Length: 222
Image (cartoon, rainbow, N blue to C red; front, top):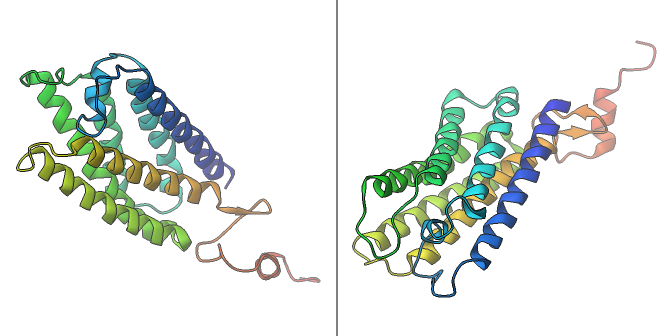
């Protein structure tokens, strides 16, 4: 369906823009900030309303763009709800800042932390649930990235508490990379659901084009 493909392409553009903005946000901050031991939020709070916060908002918007297309693709209500939770968590984390590095956490910082936790956990579970309706090669990627994301989230929790924040910045950035990749796989799967202008039924994505054409073309004389 044209709407499904366009939604996937638009979301891919938003994901790419968010990635570029996040990289720029790291380049613009003070050299005193260590990306291995400080989180992305620690970088963002030094530039409130800057490009990292904008990147989070763009990523949330790209996710929302996918929701109608995913419903048309057969995604369940729970997967959609989890994607909404991911988007809402990103927006809340972008709007409500954490504390400056080294300062005690206040109410806003706790809200920021738990909004981030909701987002980080909701997306991989949604990705796992979307593997079946999207099917094809995307299913394997989604399941693999979902499991990877959950393992990385566990590593980040360990670092934040018993690990005394050991390499927490590295753990978070690898986690973000895995989750953004998961979201990109969802968008790419929706963007590729057409062959020659014809919507491709599930399970046909990897069949030879000539074979697909014979099955979707009416028999002569019918």
